[in-house]
Image (tube, rainbow, N blue to C red; front, side, top):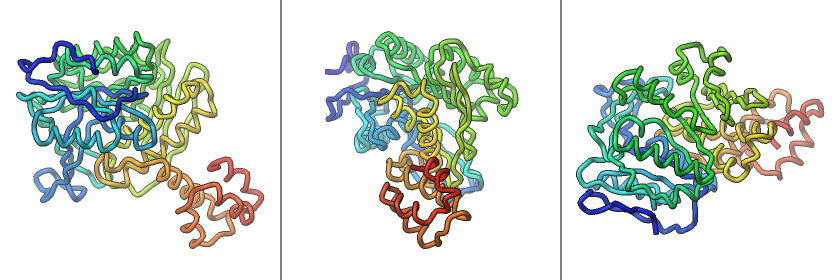
Length: 389
């Protein structure tokens, strides 16, 4: 049974259990909410005639990204005991996420966010959470058994903004660390939720040196360092002794990575971007899925690059569909994107027709290799095979 000592009806919460009894490899802690996304890009919230309801919230997105790729995950957080809250928990269950760490609050509502999509697919947020149920999670409501069994404990910074959730966050992080889990941190800067930019920066950095793996976006590097993210000196100012991996996502350009022993960049994938919501979470979920199965990926340069190529593909794919969780890819979709991208990239040097590209892109498995070998100019065969196969 989950460890939920201290939970009572008087605290207006009840614990939800899922059907899964196996111990998930990755436990994600934090918020889950409803994103209301305009049905068209490039308009203001006031101008949008229709909003599409989509489940979201970075830690929950990561949990779903993991299971979509065949990994195992759990979500720990609190929801309002309302229609939206129960809908979100159902979404977690339908995506195979363990919900033994979830509880409901009868007095606070589930958080909502209205998201404006710019013409380039980037977003602006308006949040409704004053306070929302996720902010009211108490340390006594934590499923410590779930946390202590995790291989990786993943979290963001939004749960640090107010009490009692901040104390619950700190306690969960401490328990995971003491149990030997890797700590994964994606700050996910959301300035409208913090009292000020300074408070946001200070709050994020208050737990910075606790993490083993940190992922930040290009824009977040600039916010945290107040410098140019393209300047490696600024990025490395975020490094500290004890950190195992620092990841910087650069949109469709791909990502950069920094470890104690090596660093580099992995090329991204150019796609028809519709909505960037959840792209970073898809990236993180993909990488954590690999790290949970193969912790040595943090120390093996080639395996790290391979994992990050797949993570870039996951992030890219997720931008082609509106919403966060609905856009998360499975392994087949990821490999298809990678295959199609490299095939098109080398198309000018391949003796292939457009119909062949379309046909083989739909079947990105090893059976395509003999066909390619017979038609690819020998000059490019090795490069293509190395890039994809």
